Length: 470
Ligand SMILES: O=P(O)(O)OC[C@H]1O[C@@H](O)[C@H](O)[C@@H](O)[C@@H]1O
Image (tube, rainbow, N blue to C red; front, side):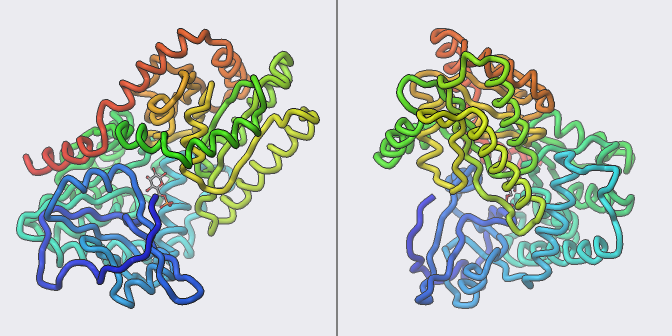
């Protein structure tokens, strides 16, 4: 992520139209408002940014997410090729926090404690109306900006209604929808009220093509459509498994700031110790708490690892507007402190937990890792599992949840775990720590090959080509 001052005046000229449009809640740039009134622009990375860079005639439509973004829209400050929608802040909060992150994310990641939740009441219906308004704002902006017959690629669960709405406004467009999350199995999807479940499916089926990260999630979507609507209609279903960006990662991982952080981490770990590394957003689906329990079980049942291993856990703040995420963050911190209190010695801190986002430090940890722990309850893909083998300095054993999308591509060379099985995960950590150097290197090489099979640009261009072919 690069941070620099924004100098350019806003986006597309009023009468221009684009041939390739991307729509997502979070855009490729965000603004913060400094105390002196300056706007600071921060540019994001990732598959879409990299993919779209291969296209000339393009526009990215996204939402203004905070005060800085809203101020940028008001001042007409922006990036060429990006249109930020200044949707009413309360409508956005209902749609993003209320529906997208608290309902749809929970459904697709199986996160509800079903004896007491979800509760679909009048408050939910009110938030749902905001979700519709927010989706309509995107559909209208896209209809306005798209050239005749343009390709529009709509992203994720935030914008599930957009394809259907846009189809009505602009039947000439080629519309794709891409889900970056898992898709819920039909019995779980049916927790949603029937009319809402139908509306979501019909919304996505407004696209010419609905695509997913793995076959498993695509099949789950087809299953929901078949059972609830009787079929997928004319919408084609695609699978595109986003891979790691090897060129970028290998270059970035050897810059000076990463080397500096490696030296600092080495110091924290101590001479001659092994490392188990995890890097996540502090996200309920990432299963960080059970990961810590598994590490504790390892130290209990295999005391020979005491003093000889350090668990480096990076858990970066995410969705802190939601109480359940704040509570989860606190639980992670409490448990790490407990483990350190229970096992730590004067010269050994068993868990090194960092909660401040730092990409260079993540890369440093990837390079250092002897073992990477990726144990989500459920995950669309999980790019950490793909990035670690690409930048690893000396080979790294991967402990991988069978519920991560990445398992479909990496399962053969990873040590695969059931994410709920703490005892099994502790044993997998032991197996990973005791793997021979040769075995580890061989596996890491094969994992890196599988992880980079579909780099971001190819991933994006494949989708575009498939959509245009009709
Ligand atoms: O809520 P945020 O921070 O914008 O994150 C949303 C994104 O989070 C990612 O982890 C998911 O893979 C995406 O599917 C999703 O769009």
